[in-house]
Every structure is written in structure tokens, then in C-alpha cells.
Image (cartoon, rainbow, N blue to C red; front, side, top):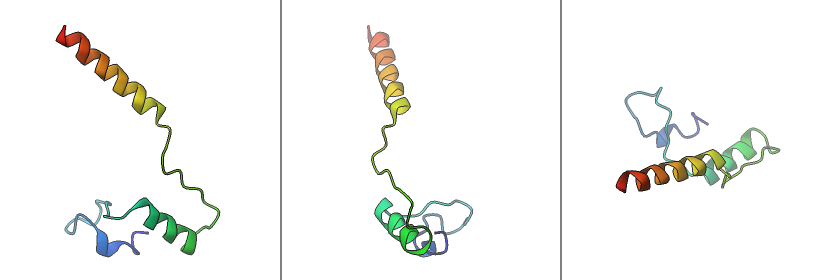
Length: 66
């Protein structure tokens, strides 16, 4: 993947910073075509811990404003 998307790197100076300007659909296509067609991509994860953390932060903000 790194070689395939080399021209789309965000950090052109430090190649160890592995961030690329690509969509998940592009990544999925390259993986399925060149590596493993049996892989499954979950494009909208449940992210339960993220949403729980957001709720806790919102509650703390509400309490602080009282």
C-alpha cells in the first residue's frame, strides 16, 4: 500500500510519517485487487467506546457550566 500510494503522501519530507491522502474505497480496491480478496472492510464502525467517551465529556461540560 505504501508503494502504491507513495505519490499521495501527506508528509513529503519524512516518509516514516505514514499518512496518505486516499479514501477508504481506494484502499479497499487496492487490497482486494493486489493482496487478499477475502478481506472485509467495515466502513462505519460501531465505535461504542468513542461514543461513550463523548457522552461522558458532554456530561462533564454540562456539570461544569452549572
